[in-house]
Length: 280
Image 1 (tube, rainbow, N blue to C red):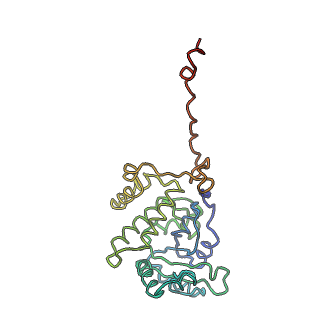
Image 2: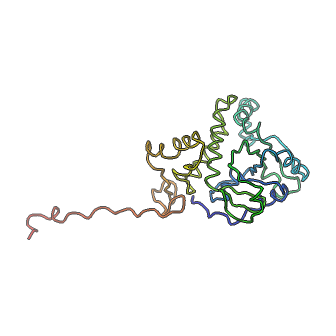
Image 3: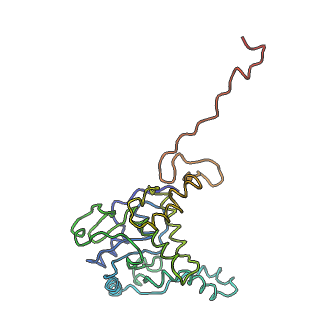
């Protein structure tokens, strides 16, 4: 797959939540923010971050708009669940690996009569968990559809750009690794997968966190995706095959950038292929 163009405006999902939570500042996060930047990703849960001091008020606004607080349902398809020897025990283990996320955020079902009911969930996230380097909303809320301090701003909607989003997710992985209550976390692995997708599809290069003041975050990114990783394993391969197993590649990479034309085999040296009798 190849990246999509960056969206010129927030999508309908983000715009609706922005209207419901206004005048609170909201920050699309996770797949919702990645999709805006052009990452081809399936959206099953819309993640919206708010300032910590606005979190309780945002929860109440959603409830007042008929959103229903719920517990995330991570059960597989019924036929898969039926084959498990002890489904309840298995699901308890799965949910345990998301406990850092579940302890820190609140998931909502859309209102019963909403066209997204049953197909999309909303996850409200305090920014102390999202770790977004948020701008000064007191001044920036007065601006309209501008890009400043790493965000595209549309009224009370602050769409993080690549640098802010990468920084927030790297810090999220580090927080998850430091969580003493989880020896292994699917949530941390999910964040790492999102970072890998952004590195593949977006212009997220080795210098993306060069201006970040958090040395631990800078080093983590370098080891797993940046300069140190490249020194050990070489540059990332972003080529796209036309068809799985075909061995043929698209003329552009995953970011949509043209690939350098490969040189054909060298021309044979005629002097070495002619017999002695053919030589002048």
